[in-house]
Length: 581
Image (tube, rainbow, N blue to C red; front, side, top):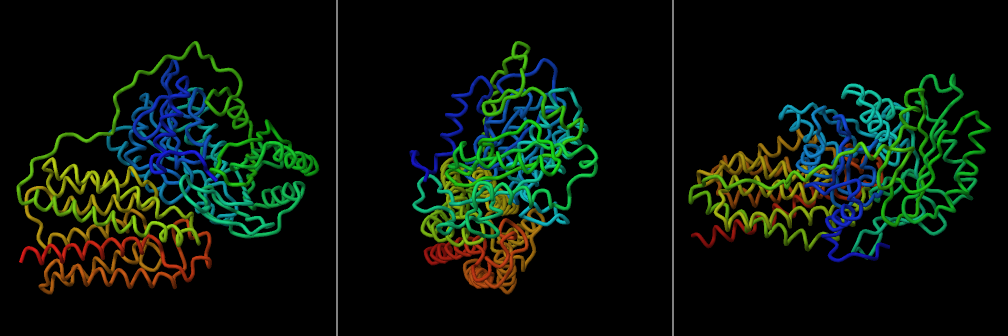
């Protein structure tokens, strides 16, 4: 278990602060993560990596000369928000463009893609490479759906080396994608991992059994078997990785040269890894594969998970040269970097803070105060149900939905309370609460709730008292925006399954002449029924997709949490209506 923390909600923030203080030779703390504390003599393409915290040395431990220029760091097992990614990218940009690279998870894809679009809108050339090395998460003909696990190291290293050698953005993107196409990984676990402050692990493995095909966020494995010997595990890894149907063209012609990365996921000891590697090396020789620069240790962890993964990175001449190029970071060093040629980077004051409040009418300020109260009510109901949301999420996901929702709604409620006191209008309050939710929660839920509040805020504005039709129109637009942003549709076992009937029923109730409170109550009932009905659906998108039938019989946690919030808000609206009469 994880034993050392203060307030679990502050763990990630305090970890980043301590990491930056301990490694100031390489990094400086910026809003959203860390950026290099030194600059190379000539401007380079900025390679910005990132993902959730809890995976050290991924991601911050890989920032330094010859590797990444910055790391956007989300909360525990939750992707950083788009705002955080943007801030790290701006702090790391040196005028030659930015390459974003991250694991292929729904929340990361949403946030990094949004950040890429925002950076491009500012005139910064920005590209993305989503790492997808996990062979168990999708078949060879659906490689675009594969997750990113420990193979992110090879993609990040190749991109960083190319940038340090002066490649332009096109060149860096090209070699990073080629490294991505030539990287294969497979992981197993003997126990789950436990978040700071949690009493139970995110998942469990029966005594004497081993989960195969696990993710790095506490997702349970996709299959289960008895625990093999160290040799048996090595043979399992090599068999599956060599059998993957997408081994790159030309590998056999070169005699099969590959970098092996044997990765401990948190509590498997180095000595155990060496015993496993011994047999991997024997098998590689037997099969005519030449292993280049073997890496054995911890490269992408999952707190205290007892697990192991093997990555094979198939080389060509250019990729081998880039892999062996010098790098100097807190957790990964290769060759000799000329530190005397590096210049210190001064802090630029990037804080991510918002500017002054726009002007607002008294009607809008009154609405803002009510919205702040509603967000506080949402906080209360999520706090009461966080454990249950985590429990149902752990059955076919990673178990962090309750924690993520708590972080997000607490941040939004706190921001809203402050903004209401300062005299913000309804639109500004919702927009900034949206940013607070997305920044603090990260992950898919953080992204989508940010979209909901931001879209509703744009509809309400700061100049008028929002009536029932304005609110209904805003919710309808939010529903459409969520589907456009997350690409999910009704019937795919996501939040959308509850959001769409909520928005449609609310619009119909207002159209029929009902009050906002009455229409909202009917819409909340529709959302709750729809959330319950997701138990009969198979997941199509999101992390639960890989677990298929495990998700049957369990309601989607995103739909459940939305139903809880809109039901609570409806009760408060009804109370407010009674008081006003």
